[in-house]
Length: 265
Length: 106
Image (cartoon, rainbow over all chains, first blue to last red; front, top):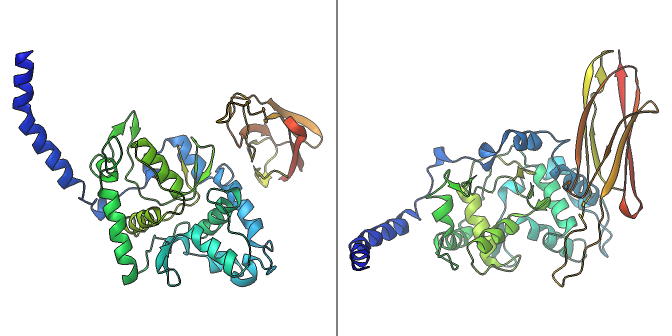
C-alpha cells in the first residue's frame, strides 16, 4: 500500500508534464500537406458506395432536393429555381464557401440558415427544421453542385472573430471526460478509438449519409454526436457556437475537395 | 412514391453477364424499437423485391427486419435479348414501388 502511494507520488510530476504537453499540443494545427479526408480511411466497400451515384444512399436525398428546388413554396408562390435558375450553374461552389457573413444579422450563417433566410425573405415560407427531411434534401442538392470543388472560405475580415471563437471552442476542454476536439482530431488523428480510425475532422462531405444513422445528417448533427460522446452539454441546433465551429472547421479544411453527399460509417 | 436508383448497363452483347444495382429509399423500421415513452414502434419494412426481364421473373428476394434502411440489392444476370427490366418492391402498410430500365442487346 505504502509503496503504491510512494510510486504514485513519484509519478505525479511526470503526469503534470504530460498534462501540460496535452494542453500545448491541443492547439497545434495539422500541417496543410498532412491533411486527409475521412474518405481515405474508409473501407473498400464504403468507398465504393460513395463513389457510385447509384449505390450512394445520399443521392436519394439529392433527388428529393432536386424536386424541392423547383417546387413553389410559401405565400410568395416562388421556387428556388425562379430566382436561382439552374442549380448546376448558380449553386456551383456555393456550399464550399459557407458559412458566410450575413450583414443583416451581423453573424456568419451556414448553408442551412442561408436556405431558411431565402425561404423566409424571398418565398415567405416557414423555415425548415434542422435535420428535417426537406432541409437535408435541399442542402444535399445544393452541396452536390460543389462536389469536387475546393473548400473556399470567404476572405472576409468580418468572419475572423467568429472563426477565432470557433477555434477557441475547438480547443477548449469540455464535458465530463474533460476533452477538447483537438485532443482526438489533432493530437491522436490516425490512431484508433475502439478499433475505429480517428479522423482529422474535416467537414468535406456534409450533409452526408452515415451508415450508423441510416440516414443523411448535417455537420451540426455530427458535432452534437461528438459532444455527447465527450459527455458535454450539447448546443441547440443552429446555436452560434455550432456555426462558429463550422466556420473554423471549414477554414481548417480550406482547399480540400468537397465530397457531398459523402458516405461514412 | 419512394425514390429509387437503378443501374443497368444501357448496352450489352448477347451472352454477357451484367450487373444490376438497385437502391430504394425506405425507413426499414424493424418493429423492435421503442419510443422514449416505451411504446413499440410498429414494423414498417419492404418484404419482397422482384425483378422481371421482359415479363419473366429472374430474381426475387425476401427482406427481413435486420436489413438496414434504404435497401441496396445487387445481382447478376445474362443479357439474352433487348427489352425491359421491371423492378418491384412491396412491403408493410401497402408499400409498393415500381421502376423500369431498358437494355439494348446486340
